[in-house]
Length: 329
Length: 290
View 1 (cartoon, one colour):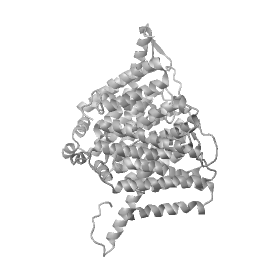
View 2: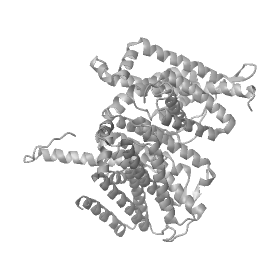
View 3: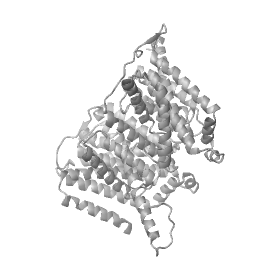
View 4: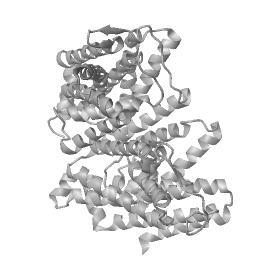
């Protein structure tokens, strides 16, 4: 149970927030940050642990959003089943795409490119197909209630997204400690060597992509319920592909808490920029881009990696410390 | 529908627009061939170059065909500086980091343009924008013919640089065997930056050829670059003849599918070609190996 204690502690602290903070603006901010953390955790499973950098996680986010919304609006499905449907659809898409891409041996630049193009194809299709509401988008009718998954209070949404983030943290921790996780990390470090040792690399990567897609799709499903509106630019836009990869990279790529930490930092920076200069178009993204470049430059292992190296360095400077290797200065 | 009177002009127009694609794709493939990464900032740099050409015309009164001689060196320098002092040092020699840094730069450049100039679409008026050449059976737009010829001139110039100059030899050496080149005394960081500069200069030239008949807004580069990605993948990553042939093929395919299917579906057609080529033959038509 010990490895799960930090997760429990973090969740307990975050769960207490609505008892202290009553401002709807702040809660709204935290809900969005947690949603991005969830999308980022999805990216982190495939990108962080598996080393496959996707530039098109919008494909999964958007599929979750659209399926949740369309099932309710067009087929009258209960919102909770719609939510599950969105996650399943996202996972299925991840499986299909993963099987195609990894069987043909695409890696690195090619993988980034094909995921980006795939999200873009889906965006164009969604912007013209009648079932998605084409250019107008799809609106979920406002109808508050537990049955319809719509709540007046921001706190209710907050606890739901927090629970989802909690599940994703536990999943990441389980993967990290499992045999599957070891295979995945082996593929990231050296795919050819992993294959030589008998790891079925393309299956491992495909499974990682299914889990990754399901988590990011869950964030998309939540988006649909929270904002009750979706169009092609929101669902499949590049903004979510970028935020999904930005959060784990800034927080600490391939770490359990990286996406959560990254999302809180990134969203705080975005808000601070808006407060300082007014809501100018593009400004938050300029900051995200700059932070992305700077973090890779200065702290390639993200904030968590940076903190760990700093701690190691401090311990080394203390006279009584045992000699350990310090490789990241 | 299939009468030659409609098909032939469509094909010729496809070839003319394909030439501009070729120039953009040439920049991408050059960078990929040497640095082995895809430059995701290519589209944002194209948007920036279009803005530069636009303001050179509006503020300085420079015709795009004149300002190209200023913008090409300026963007070469910009590309050199970006690679030498930002992308190179920031990515610590890791390919995945390099991809992310170019993506980060793309986001910064694109949104800086959006922040500075808003999402408005701008155009310039040049006297020759609507001039045509009468071939008897069809009319050719003058700016497109100029573009077509210019692209082949640039491709020829690149070939000369690559084949006959020391810099070109150094670039080819680094592309083939980075470590060996380094051991032979070639400054790899410098060669990387020169290559990135050349790729960026291609984009600036393409912008000057496009602006007389096209518009500019902060996201205009994206559409071209997704087409350029397709071309590069189709032709084979890193292959210069592949980029040229791929571009002309895609230009014609786009022109014909626009004729038969309409605009937005034509775009999907290009992406489908892209994904199918990536999945079936990632090395492309001319590429040796993925």
